[in-house]
Image (tube, rainbow, N blue to C red; front, side, top):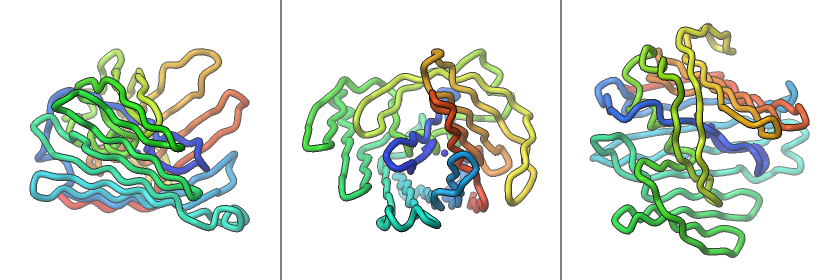
Length: 240
């Protein structure tokens, strides 16, 4: 939701794991969501996110095309891919990769060794891999397996660990179910997630749509200087 995967190298599509249990019957076997990405209300790009589960494996992809004047300086699309297995607990990433502005990054999840192997900017390093860790794409779709209903979002807070391909970070969110928002294609009942942060940290808010298997329909990032980035769904298709 990456959320969640293009902001000219800065946007992190932050999402969270809401619960440990899996509800495979409620999750789509595939989905396609189109988003507009805006900076202070001015459109920067159009993002297409796709997800599919088949034969016990999953594949998620995000492709962002710059629009308007931004397309003159950002000619090549930004691409992100996450692949892995579908388990009893939901998604278990095996590999995450990103390609943007002629540069690439890779994150390989070595679950037997509990190591996360990262490659970016000519560097290679490994980190301890905690159970349940996700990447910036897989975390969005893990929501579909973790959330039984909007009522499950009434927990005081939710913690998760995610890699963006360069590092591994912990996040804490609170959630409020039953929040109605207007999107470009329809009014939706959502679960509203708010990142807990320090005064000098960026703010993140996410809106999930239970009607569409809890895919993200809106993400808001507010940076330290007050600049607002919004990723808003314009079209959603799911197959159950």
